[in-house]
Length: 332
Image (cartoon, rainbow, N blue to C red; front, side, top):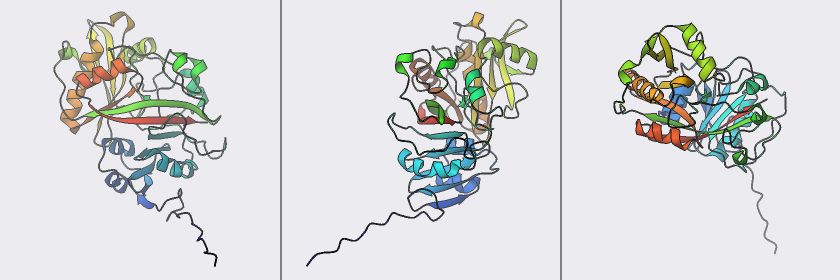
């Protein structure tokens, strides 16, 4: 007698996302609780406007204003859900670290992916490819967006843009041999980076006493144009609560943005005048602002490109020992 083999039916999501049994999450409080009160979840959900998500086992995926999709947990499980959420117009997917050969769910070019991009450290070429209006979220991005602090040496003010030729897929800035494998045509930017945070005040650094809040938009604009032209964190940006800086006489030689939100301190747009580099100004400013934001929020975070070992070591020396590996995908 032949034994019948039961057909295995795929698990159905209770809300239609992905392939797993997923629990819907309505609002910021539900998302943050599901994420274990993680600083990344608190930061990216901000004031909670427009936040919704899903929990699939230990993986949490959520949609933020902008919109952008963020996730914590298992990258493969997150990918089962982000494509559905991307239908809301998410230009950015901020995911747990993806292996280079991870297959990505197909998203048709132009299919509802028309919303403003989450800020990321985009070059001018990338800014044209993506959206003109950044989203009030983390990357400078780092993300920053990428807002990501992309120091090329131990000085966090020595930041360099990616070349336009690398706008589609970025690996290590300035090292074409380390570029990452090609992604689908609808993925215009891929960044591997680390979200770092600390709740301990950093060791006092030389020159830290020179750092102070500044209200000089013209000087900040001029410094960013010279030292970090690709940043989208600028004076007048509603995401920026304020600016800190260091002056040499009357000249502003270092600046950084306070992009704190959701009860988490966050540094962005750290820049040092090219003529003033090599004197530890970026380090002193980062230490001072970190100390201030920990005093206010109890925790402070920033982003750094994964390949930037020197910068990572510097931030570790300032107490940023906790690290969350991320992959950010910028879509058409």
